[in-house]
Every structure is written in C-alpha cells, then in structure tokens.
Amino acid sequence: MIPAKFDYVKPRSMDEAVRALAGGGEDAKVIAGGQSLLPLLRIRLACPELLVDVGGLVELRGVTDAGDSLLVGAGTTHYQLVHDPLVGAHCGILAQAAALVADPAVRHRGTLGGSLAHGDPAGDLPAVTLALDATMIARGPGGERRIPAASFFFDYLTTALAPGEILTGVQVPKLGAAWGYRYEKFHRTAQAWAIVGVAALARRSNGHVTEARVGLTNMGSVPIRARAVEAAAAGAEATRQALTAAAASAADGTEPPADLHGAPDYRRHLARVLTGRALAAAAGA
Ligand SMILES: Cc1cc2nc3c(=O)[nH]c(=O)nc-3n(C[C@H](O)[C@H](O)[C@H](O)COP(=O)(O)OP(=O)(O)OC[C@H]3O[C@@H](n4cnc5c(N)ncnc54)[C@H](O)[C@@H]3O)c2cc1C
Image (cartoon, rainbow, N blue to C red; front, side, top):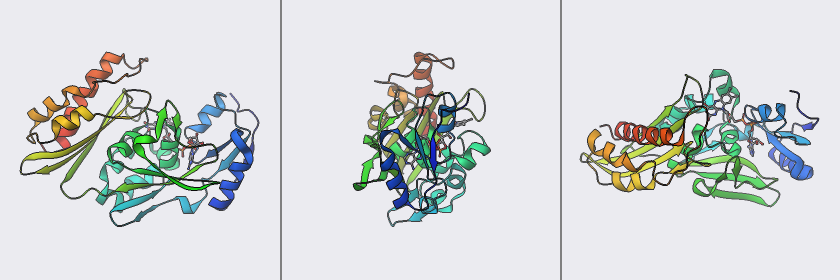
C-alpha cells in the first residue's frame, strides 16, 4: 500500500527538530532510519501529517565516554553499535544483541533510538537496556528529561516519550571486568524477530554469582526484568546446574503473546531454557 499524504521536514539541528515537532502537534512524528515506521505508514497503521526526519543529525550519532558510563546517541545505527570499540569494551551485550537485529540492510539504517522509541516488545534492544539499567535522555520544548529504562516502556508500542519529545541518547553504565553477559535469542529463521529473547548479566567472584540481571524480550506487552531469577541467581554457584535451577522462575508473572510463532506456554518454556543458557554463559559456567 501507499502511505497517506504527509509533510516532511529535514531539520539541520536538534533545536530545529524540536521546534518542527512541537509545531506539528500530536499529528507529527519523528522518523530516523524508517525501518519500523515506514512499514506502519505503508499499511496505514500510522498516518502522521508531518514527519520530522532526524536521520541526518550528526549530533545524535555515535558513542562517547562519560566516565562511569557511555553516552550512546539515539541516531547510532545497529551497525555502529556492533562495531563501536567503546561499546565492545564496556557494554558488549549491546553489540551482541544489535548483531542479531534483522539483516545487514536493516542494521545499517535502523537506529538505537528508533528501536527504543518504537516500543515493540519483540525488539531486541529494549530488554538489553533494561538489564543494563540504562537511562533514556529526551529533549522537548520544555528542555531535557531523563527517564530510567525501568519506567520507559509503558505498553505495546507505547513509551514514556511525550508528544513533542525526541530521544537524543541513552546513558549506559559501564560493566566492570567482573561482569559477564549474553543475549540469547530464539527465532524461527536467521535474521528474524525474537520469539523470545533473554539478556543476562552476571557479576562473578570466587566461583559464585554475586549479582545477576535478566531482561526478557517478547514475554509481555513490554520488556521485563525477571526479578525472581535475579534473586535466585545472586549468591548461587557459577555452575550450569545452579543457574539452570535459578532460571526455573523465568516465566513467573509473565503474559507472553500467542501468535503464529508460538503459544504462551511454549514461550514460557523458551524463557526458562534461554535464561538458563544465557545466565550460564554470562557467568562463564
Ligand atoms: C525486515 C525487518 C526485520 C526486523 N527485525 C528486527 C529484529 O530482529 N529485532 C529488532 O529488534 N528489530 C527488528 N526490526 C525493527 C528495526 O530494526 C527497529 O525497530 C528499527 O531499527 C528502528 O529504528 P529506526 O531508526 O529505523 O526507527 P524509525 O522506523 O525511523 O522509527 C520507529 C519509531 O520510533 C520513533 N523514533 C525514531 N527515532 C526517534 C527519536 N530519536 N526520538 C523519538 N522517537 C523516535 C518514530 O517516530 C517511530 O515511532 C526489523 C525491521 C525490519 C524492517
């Protein structure tokens, strides 16, 4: 199908972008890589009257070292995440998950900000930012706002971003050397969406896991933390057996979707299995 008619502006700075978006009111939308928005426009699930294209704004791109954390620009593409040396050194799970997003063509155009702002529970990066305790940084007519990942994802395709706000970046605390990580994704075919995904981080000391963080992809209308698993894994021996046992509660309290790729019970089973695998890999077991 052909999208409904819309106006299009390509601002040259963030100031211009914020003004343009505010001027368009509730019928204006940001577009970055277009990898999620364009399909919605074509089937007319979204019919904005104005598109504000932030794809050309260099100030939104790239990764900077901010001491204890990295500042990742919202316009940083999946491809850049995979290859960025700072991301690889300090938040490698972001690169690992980005490498599993779609195919090379999508990874070259799609952005971190677009993935997060889109709020698709099947998206790979939201659960990763949740496990990393990242903070989203948004700018609107009222200035800058910082939103913890834990309060950013509201519902299916709905985030805490207010109309008129643009995500400018994500602050990601650096993982120290004691942390291991693994993003496990189960998909029907290579380069497809996650039926279930698990982002696991484990801090190790003396053969034990001292702290674990687990984010789940596609186990509800938003990405979620598997808190019961995190509690069970903390203090557990860093062995496959102990961490498989800790993963038994991975599906507790979840409401996974039913679709052509899997029933809720199948997804619950996957969540338990993948969480065990991801935690064991993260803990080096
Ligand atoms: C064939 C295909 C396969 C895919 N497979 C996967 C997959 O396996 N895993 C996965 O996670 N994703 C997958 N995707 C989705 C896609 O990779 C991401 O959702 C995409 O990268 C979003 O980024 P974008 O820059 O293209 O966003 P856009 O499409 O430009 O925008 C998406 C949404 O975010 C908003 N937005 C974008 N940037 C900002 C900003 N800076 N501030 C505020 N709002 C903003 C837009 O208004 C829109 O609502 C796939 C997409 C395609 C086309």
